Length: 384
Ligand code: SOE
Image 1 (cartoon, rainbow, N blue to C red):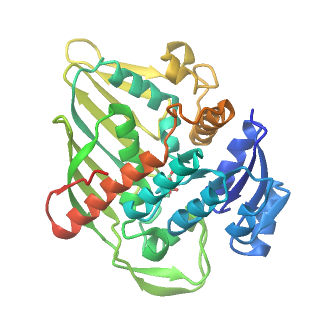
Image 2 (tube, rainbow, N blue to C red):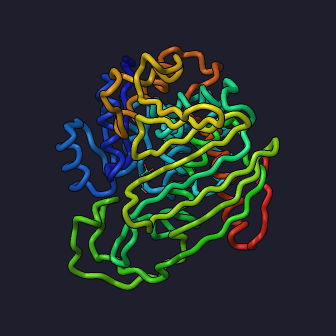
């Protein structure tokens, strides 16, 4: 594929997933950046990346880097994306795009002004079954959408000793579960249905208002297998759980529950979309299956098989039926769309991947959810 060179900012849980996916497409990773020189040097050695920097600015000054992937904690996304665009680099940013929609609108405008490619890493759209679901709904097969419902549940923050930077608002933002995983659910269901959320009513709960913070840093998802020696008590005020009622333009209704304290649910995004004729349902822990529900005939259970998928979905299935594709493949498929677009060079064409506009829209909904939870009332989602 592309002979562009990539710089990846952030080497925690998700930075290496970006590097691996890029390499599977034959895209060169020129450099990585992380906060401490000794740590980033070690990460670069393990990933066999030739150059490493201990600041984002140093990576952005590297003339060989044409595209920047931002995989740092949430608070840094806005400043790093802005600096990358000002340095003339295309940007692929992890979600959420920024801490709030005031920040994200600035990025949308700057990327447009600079005519640079901009993408948000909403990778879950790139399971083949997500594109198949989009095809089914958009082609009218299930009829008008009545109800969009589901959840995104995890258990990695269930115990008071579970710790991660996402628990600290200065790094993660004023919301946690909604921003971290609700953003994926909202993006995915918006992608599939094409429906815009108009108003929200949110209920939040922090079940663990005090946690034990290890005195050593803990990487995402590794807390379960590491025992810290020393802890300090820390008050927590971001939500462990949220349920949000959703009103969509055109009359559909929805409900989303997110939780990071649901024992046994490792990383389970579930949605069910009920239409005037049929329904579809998908469980992210069984990503190669799509449930199609009917009233007057037997329900269907579609297993991923390129031969049975619509062309839009088939292009993101690399292996034959029965050969499961999973989480790392979504990164590869997302980048195949982004780099194909960059290579084509026509930046007036409509992108077939999530852009800063999508990241901004998710943050607009997020801002309304936060306000609703605080004010305990329905809030209308602002429009730009
Ligand atoms: C942590 O909750 C997390 O890694 C999210 O940040 C990711 O976006 C999601 O893929 C899995 O969980």
